[in-house]
Image 1 (cartoon, rainbow over the protein chains, first blue to last red):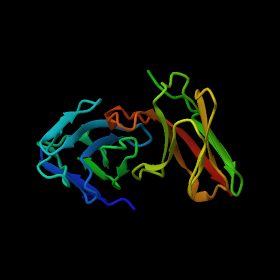
Image 2: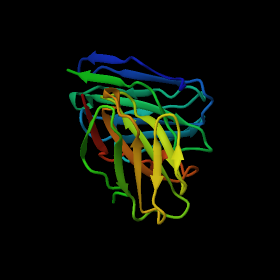
Image 3: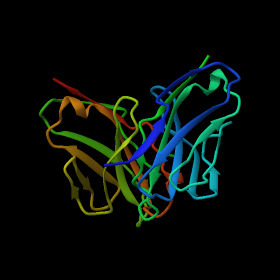
Length: 113
Length: 112
């Protein structure tokens, strides 16, 4: 059973606000990821991390930033939200020895008005 | 450049086997085939993976052709809850999931 949690599940916020999407896992996984997915569209990797103090940008350019201060925690921040940031954000983690098997959280659906 | 090709959609009757094909003609010798599914905007769920032998678990079976250029995911007795988008992915297990490309997948609809 995967133990990876995202909060909030749903967030409606006004333009210009700063938001942080939380992601935590209790499996001790070194690798963590953020994907972005619009309704009915493909998943796109926007950030990933190999471990503490490691962060990299993914295939899709994003104005969001991430940090990895603790192994279990990988928050995503938008300094100034815009309507174009409206999307679903999915967090995932994997063990280093089997990076093909990702464990996903339930997602955070962000709507920026 | 897509590493896998899947039909965009398929239908299956409830209780029947669902056979989802995937072409991966450029797969390299040490790459594995992974299958995931995503049920209506939830996070994708890992199903199964294999290298060259057929694999079976409690969710599904994976049949990989001898030349490894294609594979089939089999749900032996599909239920309505199996309606989802199914993704076939080719990757190295130790390669780092930054290379995990989900693509468009196959939307499977299980009909009553």
